[in-house]
Amino acid sequence: MKLAGWVLAAVLATAGLAQAQDQQTLADIRQELTVLHVEIQRLKREFSTTGSPAPNLSGSSILERVDAIEAELQRLTRQTEQLNQRVQNIVTDGTNRIGDLEFRLVELEGGDLSTLGDTTTLGGETDITSVAPTAPTAPTDSDLGELAVGEQADFNAAAQALADGNFQAAADQFAVFDTSYPGSPLAPEAHLKRGQALEGIGDTREAARAFLASFTGDSEGAYAPEALFELGAALGRLGQTEQACITLSEVSVRFPASALASSATQEMTSLGCT
Image (cartoon, rainbow, N blue to C red):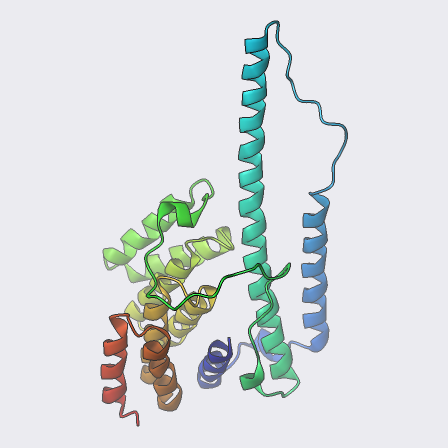
């Protein structure tokens, strides 16, 4: 989070904040926090019962009643899995929003962005056993969890546009994907590919933002090394040599087993990093 916040500040310093961001006040941020709080309360209400349960377990024989119970269990299991995925998406999205608000608050108050720590996970941390760092692996279908209807198809269409060299269409489609499926498990890869599409049309500044979004969305995931490398390379093309060198050096530190580590070293050499 420290690296991400510091690098984003560098990108914004190069291009300049948009007019709406220039006019943002602490009251605006307070209002956003209030909206986020309301959304969390709405989520909590979904865990409250609305009346007495009335499952249909009727049957004229024991076998029919057993079949009815099994069908009801399957229905409840599906609903539980759907709710679990929704909660996970909300936690991810909410945590990212809070982290963004913390960054903007420190920026508005003139604080030191380098002192920002990792944002506390919305709803509390889970117990995690410490393990030695390993090279990230590509996510499997089971890792991705349940996708919304049309989510994979929309992602594939945007990815195909990128593969065909239709960079503008790909960038637009990935932007729509991000808006349509907030908190998607495909988001890190979608942001990465959107950055590549933006690079294709020569919009390096927005490409850097997309690479940053990909890395901060899952800083330990399968696409994190490439996103971090692309971010550093983009900063170099923007003329932010010092920030680019720092970012590129993090690739080998964080992901020493990744093939991108050597690419980052070569990029640092070409930028004259010391």
